[in-house]
Image 1 (cartoon, rainbow, N blue to C red):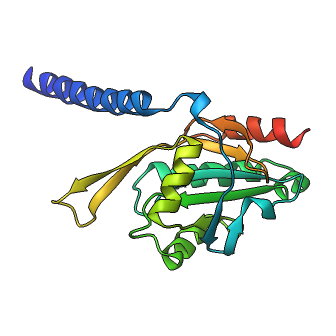
Image 2: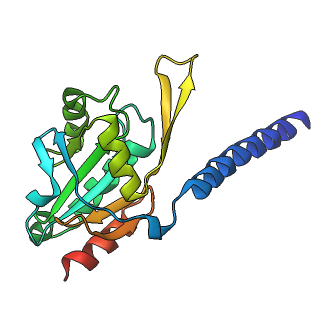
Length: 197
């Protein structure tokens, strides 16, 4: 009987160590805010050529970086965007443009992005660029990512990546950065703050 609690305790400790390791990696790899300058984004997307300059003066993009094969963080981020939109007024909702830029241009084609973004709503935009375009945008937005080979998996590799959300205007100014959360509270608060101006 004593072996079961001991086994459970060891398992829990292993999970906590793994989670702590991920947290430490993300913390250590998160760029200083002074390195985050934002700027222009012009990429092919699921709704034609996308540019931040297409936003109206009173609109904001809710920008995230991810990939369609992501098992957890990316679908959660899109779900959080959808939940936040549902809590806004009709007028506010029309002023928000949800966008995801893929960090996996090797696998994420426009067609795949269309299918993926369609799960969250027709207003969701998926943007796909070349590796060079991604590196440029990621460096300006302080986004880090790394490919993790998984030879024993059917996916071949996964990608560790930053999971913050950015509220951005048509000039590419970062109005707010919202840290990753499985709930929409932080994003709703940030949107209400910006849309109320």
